[in-house]
Image 1 (cartoon, one colour):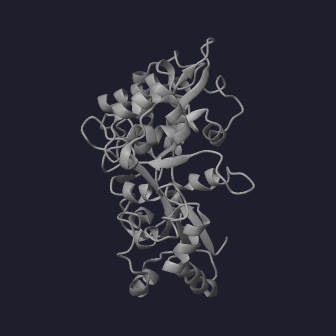
Image 2 (cartoon, helix red, strand yellow; image 1 turned 180 degrees about the vertical axis):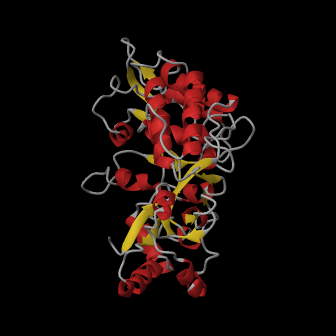
Image 3 (tube, helix red, strand yellow; image 1 turned 30 degrees about the vertical axis):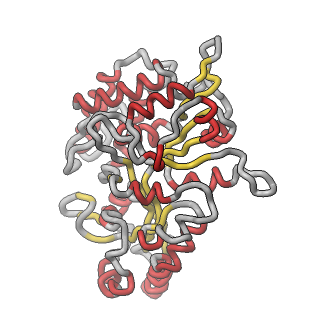
Length: 373
């Protein structure tokens, strides 16, 4: 195996449980002063811990150190908003609400006489990633996928069902976003955004490189855009999904390679290494002290990168378990029915949520995919 591995938090518990990664605690404790462990965004170190005895994330042994990532926020094509007469939120969305967001999407949407979309409010880039973000950040229902200790699926709760019905309404009744296989076929989410076919796109700081490449040979932007906080829900709350990648060392790496591997990781976690990660533009550094510097929060760009730093105040980790991948096989099976234009009438949203909960609860109980998945 490679000596150093770049790993996301979602698959880490499964592979840590199999012994793939080296226990980093002794090295971290040894070099704690140099690492400055207090200078990481809250919670991002814990998501790379796994307690094999309790079978829980966020406790136990440290198998990786966070490197980069961030929360999701809204990227907005300001030219589209202005052309549609939609209100652009002040202070990058500090006080805007779900109602403001819905009003903007309604103004931006343009239907052709044949019922197709000429212009949409936003696009959903893949059911799996987008729907998790929507359930947590856009619905004015306080809902989640799993309970707090991640032992039971809560997708059949009234709040969750209502949240999924809101998403269904936005897609099929309000027509806020293109229908898969019917509208704007052949255009990627970035193409829709930069061509003015949609007004907004939810993503993380990893969206920056794609948008920044959309420029003329002279470096001028093809579209006027900025990023904005998620709107507040009807209770005045807001939250967003956060996801981080980390550095791990293979447990099977030869002993003489482990110290050099740790030396590389330690450098990438330093202020200089974190600044280099930031300047690549792919994501936000795990250290807030570096995120607030020019390396990430760039003074030479018109967009407000600090939206992602501010979003960490209300960002929540994904409800990762050892069975994350299997859970998504179950969830995706029913999402692909209720959010697909061809099959959406085969099953109610409530029935889909109930079947998801039953399947995931069986998965969590027996530790393997139930039949029919």
